[in-house]
Length: 210
Ligand SMILES: Cc1cc2nc3c(=O)[nH]c(=O)nc-3n(C[C@H](O)[C@H](O)[C@H](O)COP(=O)(O)O)c2cc1C
Image (tube, rainbow, N blue to C red; front, top):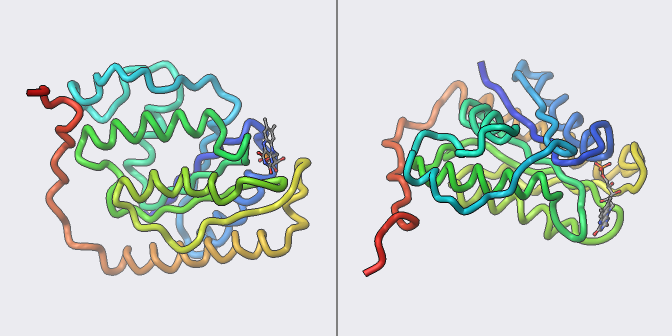
């Protein structure tokens, strides 16, 4: 069954990011796509320590195993679509979301692009400034992983919990993204992409310098 995983990088579990994510997922559920949301924001999440063990082990895991990141990596690997959601914090994603990007990104590179050809996009909750840059941080994760980005990211405006519901344009964009992802995923379910050989694991990090 087609499934989409959303990851909420906001520490406000039921805040504006959550409203945007739920709006996207509602459209997917309408066509029978299974959805799940992982609450990452507000949890104790370590940053990448540059130990490079993921390139040595190549076991699809980060060596740091006592936070949510390995669960995210496994669920992202098994999903057909991935949505990252973050509020803007000092003109960029939250630290929890950035930690996921760095660690899942390196684990993916070490293992021949774990998320290649999956459908992805991002939602951003913003009060005033930095939304495009925040969206770009998440979109670059998808692009670096050779995923398929389904149109523009969603930007919803608001400050206090629930404010984003009053941003008609932002809410409309969230619904729109859900519809686009639903269309693409339904199509790919019927006409899957040809099976490709897994990409070669990235050797650049482990190659000895001459
Ligand atoms: C630490 C922190 C930094 C923030 N930085 C920005 C910012 O740079 N630009 C902005 O427009 N809003 C900023 N905000 C406001 C949030 O992005 C905004 O309230 C958003 O709707 C919160 O979404 P949430 O309810 O999903 O957490 C910041 C909020 C916090 C707590």
